[in-house]
Image (cartoon, rainbow, N blue to C red; front, side):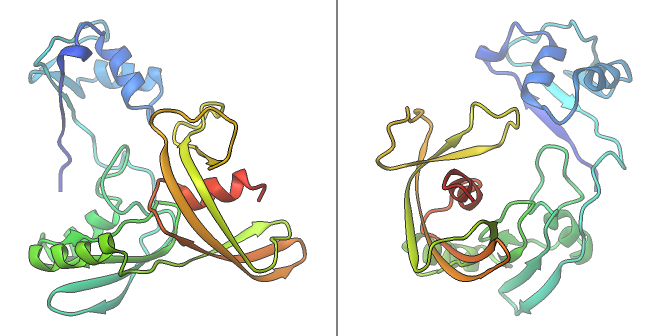
Length: 247
């Protein structure tokens, strides 16, 4: 299973040196790494090798030839919870991406299942973050996927996460409604922040509204076990909300 990564350069991306473009767009390699990959002819423009200073033009096809063994190791210890002729329910461990993206291709749940099934078609109904363990539902037919997605969209499916946090979480139930957006103060590109609905902070234009319902289950030696029921599905919603609440 080979990875082919193509990018077609849009008009507003033209005029940039290929090295600068790659460093800005794909931060999983450092600048010197991208420079070495370009020098090793692992980056092609319109099917031909280039140099770091090559200027991209509108309509160019930029290709990255990723080599085997370049992906970070992952936890491949997933298990099948349920399976019939239309559905597949997977218990996904932490440190396993659901689908290809960034540095990950074969080392994903998608890649592992493709290898196991010999390339049989399946459709992700829901996905969870690479770091998160939990249930992933897949459909084996387009009709089953559409039916399941309709149930997710209508709110007929309830998702509950178990979270351990540092600190004494308040008793009872806590409803956190607000906005999730990128944390511009963090050097971590994907880090999100939560701003409560009544927050006086500036809410960036790309913010997404979110709602999570929390309930304390138990406390022990400065830590709390909390159930989290997200009513919306935003990137890192639960972690960002809890962190912003001080946990």
